[in-house]
Image 1 (cartoon, rainbow, N blue to C red):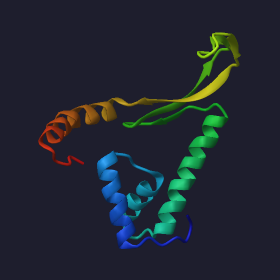
Image 2 (image 1 turned 120 degrees about the vertical axis):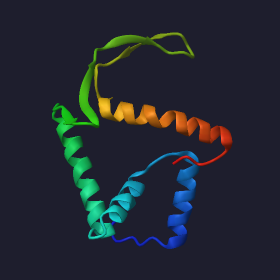
Image 3 (image 1 turned 90 degrees about the vertical axis):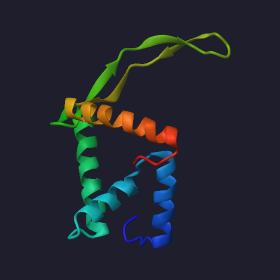
Length: 131
């Protein structure tokens, strides 16, 4: 996406789309960062987001735990090998061991989300966008 220019129409379409789906994509994160810090160009914001996500991914691949105070922690959980069942045929299937990323929200984030939930529910009931 480096060097790609977005027009006002594309940005408006994205914000409309995301207002309805309540999803935040990587592109939305880059845009929010660039808007919040005016001295950052879109390209600089994109580089910053990519660098942070790459560093976090590399740390998790190495088995490290990442803790961001007030936000949460990322870790790697180990899933032991087990026997599963094919739902269509019913035959037993060996499921190998896995390492999977895990996120645990911090207390401040949990409280922030929980405090926002009643306002969002009442806005949804009234048909208003609460974001």
